Image (cartoon, rainbow, N blue to C red; front, top):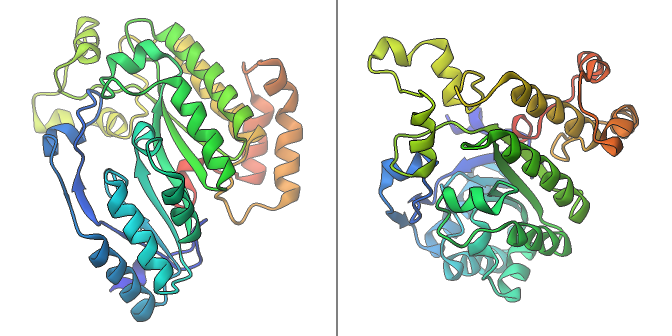
Length: 320
């Protein structure tokens, strides 16, 4: 019953999801995908993916596709050929996928042009941190850096493709400094490319050997050992990467992250909420401007109250 799953999003009024590949060839030590696939990446050919999209258009009238692959952009040649085939078929679609920043920074300008012209609207990117030391501990292949994050934000602005960047805050061994650096870096990203969507999570360990996991265990963190433990509501929250019970995170840090989100999401409302009027956006920005400009995030009670009246949404709950 495919029509049940077609919905309106930022990319198009009739959007459907599709998997064109399985896995990811990288071994980031905070990512649950690693244990599932162990570095394997299996992908359909560009020809098949383009043919599938054409079938979706012909059969169900879709005008946008979310590629929910763990890493759609792993192979530049595949992405370039897919884009060429979409253009050759005359398909007027929008599309979205997940990528690594360092991978896409190696793409040629020709590939960027093809992606833009074929309808690429947004790319989800794991920026992860505003600290190069934290990125190194995350084992992002030794290639990730804050400089590359800013570089791709600039490039995507030039091609009018929205970067959707996720950040993991509160990482051990110094969650306070890690959070401070990342909040300041997010503000810098927004200066470079105001259209950038920002998604924030608190660090939650995965059972994968590495410095971050070892540091988490040293604070007393342990995984449940029974089924009953795993279905406890606190661990359901953990699985969504929004747990507030991490032993290395104290209350001031948790409040700082939450309060910054309130201010950021009001000052820079998500561009993916197609139902948000310009009046709403102007009101939210005006209400949060003094806080954002001064870097004062404590007790944003007025923004919480405004949210109840206007019901604006976080980036990750809109359009995806």
